[in-house]
Every structure is written in C-alpha cells, then in structure tokens.
Image (cartoon, rainbow, N blue to C red; front, side, top):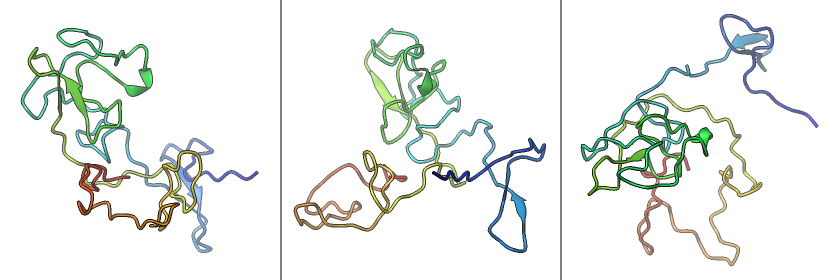
Length: 173
C-alpha cells in the first residue's frame, strides 16, 4: 500500500511545512497552509469554526454549552469534546447550515449566529473522489441519474421539488 502525504515537514523546518514537487525544475517548495489563528469567519457550514462570537443573528446572548439553563440539551462538552463546545461561543456540532447556539432567553431556545464567510479557500483534507466509498460523502463525480434511472434535479433548482439543501446553504457539499 502506498500513502501520499499532501503537506509535510519531515525535518521540522522553522519556516513551515514543505514537500517535494512534481516540477522537474523545482525540487521542493513550502506549502501554503492556513494559519490556525482563530478566524472570525466560516468555511462551508462552519463545523470547524473556533471563533469567539457569542451573539446570535437575532441579538440573543448564547447560553454556555456546559449549562442546562434556561434550556436543557444534550450537547455536553465533556461528552463530545471533539465539537469544541467552549464557553458560550457559536458552534455547529450537528451539521446545520451554519453555527448556532442555545440562547439565554427562555422564550428563544436557539438561533443561528451571524458569522461572515471566509474569503480564503479552505484546503481539502479529503481527496474529491469520482467513485463512492463508505457513505459517499467525498464523491464529487458527474453521475446525474439515480439507481432506478431517474434524472437528478439540479441542487440549485426548486422544481419540481422544493427543498432546503441548496448550494447556498451547503456551499461545500
């Protein structure tokens, strides 16, 4: 089995990750990797958002994730540490179209957060496949016909079926 590493820093070069190139005139070069500094913007649906915005688009203050008041919920930071449910910061632990939070208002359970989209492109860590593996979430091919022979509706279209899974709501899917 062969493994291909896209970005690497085998000698801990202080200038950052680098790799050998496929260019015969350029043996190696540094890789352009986004800085892990906290960005106050989101890529895709914001599942990797780690910023500190804690107010919703409706102006509500977010409830702390480790609190069950005023709203009980199952998003316990100690139970799901990989979701980074810190303080009362907006997060997207469940694949919603963008980050959200429970609010401190007893009359408003939750609300989306107004976080701008990042201008820079998020690097893909999963190759875009033209064949399906596992659940097929990495598939990016051109098949537009169902297994039963039905032509697929364009995702941006609301005809003949109205739906919410539009490219605007799910820009990286």
